[in-house]
Amino acid sequence: MPPLNEVLKDFTTVVVTGGSSGIGKSFIEQTGALRPGLQFCNLSRRSPVINVRELKLRHFPCDLAQTSSLAATAKAVEEFLESEAPTGRILLLNNSGFGAYGHFPEPDISALTEMIDVNVRAVVELTARLLPLLKRRGGVIVNVASTAAFQPTAYMGTYGATKAFVLNWSLALNEELRGSGVRALALCPGPTATEFFLRAGLQQGSVPDAFGMTCEDVVEATIRAIASGRSQVVPGWKNKVSTFLVSKLPKPVAARLAAMVLAQFRLKKVTR
Image (tube, rainbow, N blue to C red; front, side, top):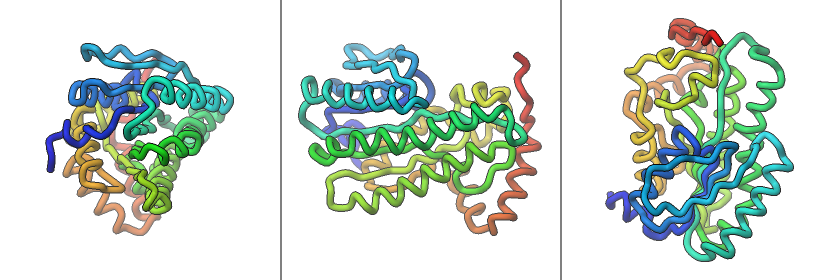
């Protein structure tokens, strides 16, 4: 396995959604430190605050739940890259996403449909809009799924279903892209130290620390998966074992077990 900075040497541009926090922010920080000179484009509502000296970062304010906002922003990103970073491979990280806990249709219908828009539609649309540019220059598309993609997830059913879509769509897309100079990678992290739990309406300690990973761990696993040419990566050996075992179970059995586990994980609503 080559050093991590060598993996990125042919890339000149990284386009990230949701780079203001969590895995997206860590990805910008780590790859920016490993590969000085990379041009970063971040699409999110908030502008990221990144602690890397001389980082080339352009923030594009965007509401990924709104089709019109995403279409206009994707066009602006393409025009910016054509003028400021016209050559070299591109890494697209579709990272934005969120979950919600509760008995369906909790927390409310609008939150669930917004989740589908951000977790699914925005991933497909941004990829489609930037794909011609990626094919001209070569690159990698990293779509953030989840270990929740491997089984039905009661109490977080809509979230798990969106991530199952991202996983399967990414694997199919990778096959369709063979020979194009572009690859797709499904990143399936388990519980990670991010703002995810708070936004989902849960306390940060809801999921046992034994399965938790840092964002830095996830980013390193992602870069290594890019280097090895993989189409799917589950960071962390415990997550690998759990997803392998659950994939061997009949879906109804996996659904029942997941419901029992989630119900016991101290999934307590945050009092606001």
